[in-house]
Length: 250
Length: 250
DNA sequence: ACAAAAGTGTTACATCTACACCCATGT
DNA sequence: ACATGGGTGTAGATGTAACACTTTTGT
Image 1: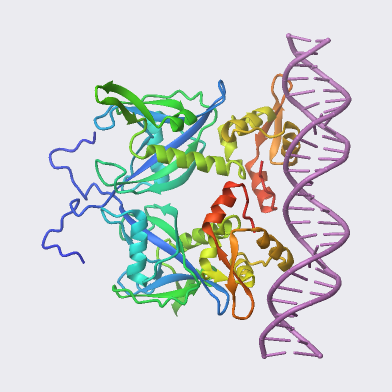
Image 2: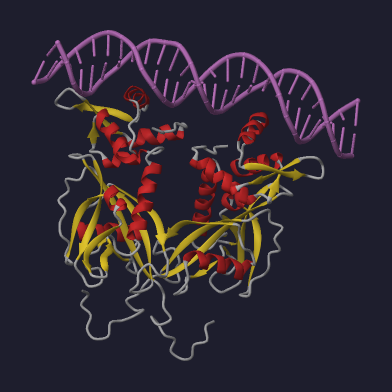
C-alpha cells in the first residue's frame, strides 16, 4: 500500500482522466473524396487546432455510449458503424493533464449530413483525409526569426487519424465495412468508386462485376430510375455466408 | 460547463479507474497445450477466482509500461511479444468500482519459466486455454437448494481471454506472431506443431515444407545435435519481404 | 527391420488477371 | 454514331490440396 497518512489525497494521487475520441469518415460523392469530421475549436489551449470530436467518459457510461453521445452533442450525427479502434495513453499526449483516450472509428453513409455547430463553441467541418495527412503542419505566420508553423490537429489526433485510416484500408478488403460509407442502396459502379476512393486503385470492372455477382448477400433492390440495378446489403445472408466459409475479399 | 458551485467534488464526480490486464500465452511442449498464465488470488472479493495479471495505470506510466511492470511484479516474466488487445469498459464489469481495463496480449517463448509467486499473496500458474474456455464455471459445492457454481475467472476475464485467443488465432495465419511462442531456434516440425496447437489442424507436411522453404526470412541456424536443421526468424529480412509484397499466410 | 522425419514429384483443381468482345441504351 | 454501362469468354499465370514415392536416421 502507498504510504499515505490520514486523508489520502484523491485527485492528487492521480488517476489518469479517461476520454473517448471518434474518427468519423464519410465520402463526398461530388468530388470522390474520403473525408473526416473535425472540430474547429475556439477554446483556450486548442485555439486554432482542429480536433476530433470526443469527451470524457462518465462514471456510468459505456465507452460506446460515450462515443455516440459526444458525436451527437458536437456534430448531431449518429453513425451507422462504430468500432473501437485503439487506446492512446502516452503520458505526454495531452500537455494539460494525464489523459488516456479510447479512440473509436465511425462511418456514416454519404455525408450530406447537416453538420450542426455544437453547443460548446466548436464547429464541425468535413476535411479531406489525404490532405490532412499530407499537411500535418500549416504555416500560421512569420517573423524575422523565420516562419512559424503549428500542427493542424491537436495533440496526437493526427496519429489517431492515421491509425483509423490504416484500419479502414485494411478492413475494407476482407469485410463489408465499406458498405457503411455507401447509401442504403447503391449501384455496382458506386461500389467500385468506393474502393477506388479508399484504396486508391480500382479493380478490373469485368472481374469486379463477376465477383460481386457471386455474393448472394448483395441483393438486388429495384432500379435506379435510369434502369441501373440497385444493390442492397443483406446482413443476415452475409452472416450465413461467412458461417458457410465465404471470404469477402474484394 | 457543469453547474457546480464553489469546490467542485473531485473523486465524487468520479472518474473511472484505469487498469491494464494482460493475457499471456505460452506453449507447454510436453503435452502440446496452449496455456495462459492466471493468478490464484487469495484476497477478499476475488477469493478463489482466477484472474489475469494486471494492475492500475500510474499517473506517469505508459500503458505498455504498466503491462510490463505488472507482469514482472506478479509473475516475474518479461514477454517477448506484447500488443494492445482491446479496452473493456462495461460499467458493470467490476462490481467493486467503475474500472476500465486496457487489455494486452503477450506471448512468451516455451514456458519453462519459473513462475514466481508475486509479492501480493497471489500465485501464478499456467492453465490450459481450451479447458478454461470449455469450463467457464465450476462446481463449488451443493446444498438442498441445488448445486452451486461460480465462474472460474474473475469479472469479465473470460471474455478478455476469449478475445485474446481469437486475436491470436486470426493473426497467426498472416503474420509471424506465432514465432514468439517458439524457442529462438526451432525445427520445421516444431513450427508445424505450433500451428496444430493454435489452430487445431495441421497443414500437409509436404506442402508446408515447400512453403516454409520459400520464406527467406526463416534462415537456417545450424543443427539440432540430431542433424535436424534449426530455423531462426530474421526480422529484418521479414520486413523487407513484406515491403516487397510477400504475404506470410501459412 | 521398422518407424519417423526429410525431401522430391505429380496431378487435378480453383482462382486471379488482363484483355477481347458483344449487346443495349440514351443523346 | 458514339460513349457508357452491362455482361460473357478465355488464355496464361499462379497457387493449393492431396497423395505417392524415395531416402535417411535413430533405436
